[in-house]
Length: 322
Ligand code: 8YV
Image 1 (cartoon, rainbow, N blue to C red):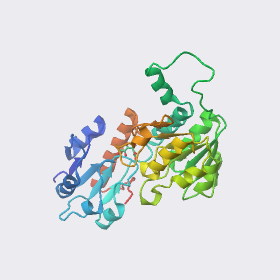
Image 2: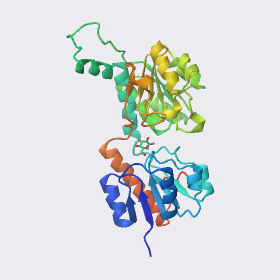
Image 3: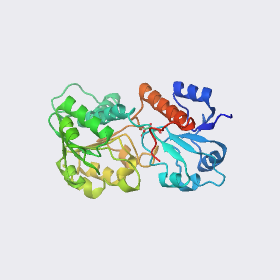
Image 4: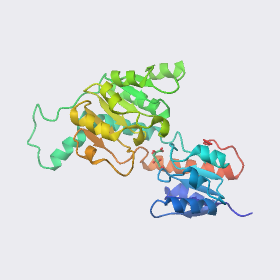
């Protein structure tokens, strides 16, 4: 029997890549991200595509005439770049990689809390520019996170891990708002209180950390109106998806002191970062590092390989989203 033909649209960490290459008729795109035309072409050439965030699998691409693809095994937990309704209509299975990147991404949320609250990027830039004139009681004072209120907008795996870490590290009081209220035992274990609306969460938080999925439903949920509800001393942290935040409104809020600082790991049009944000000292800007550890990226790759293998050997596909 012929081995299924699969395309890795981007290079994978070594273990998973080698395994896929050995067990499948696998092709690797080692170059730039594929264009829409190349993705459409790939739809007709392969049985499975192992995609990443940079591959926008639109309804048009998924409905490519003569499509052969039966599985899209995404490398990453977020899958708003894949039109899942169109995939379903085309009978294509979609999988993601939950669990394995939860801790790494929550760590970046904590990193951004610390970097913003203690003005770490601004301070380091100042030192490197030769502006440090020696110790001073007044220079570059930040804010303590100790005992402050953390508001989590979205309370899935990563939001919950962020709650656990922030409580352990800084004794923060944890509030959350999400589409679905979690079970009382989870709330109790994490010491997290549910808040009815995002507006109320924004108003009560010292740090508002975003953990909702991307996509049309959450597009620009953090806009000028919501930012005005926040405390002038508050910090916004985004490790979720850039599309959740209206970046122009955020730049304005940071500039005018509506809020105190923002720590971002994700952007609406990656890799573009709005110049208005680049200009601001109170914006800490990371290049989408959420899952970027050797261990996590390897584990994500293995999860993709397991999904591919389960699918083609007719076993239950645990990470199936469609
Ligand atoms: C991944 C992410 O690196 O998993 C996700 O949803 O945002 C990232 O951590 C990215 O998706 C790779 O495709």
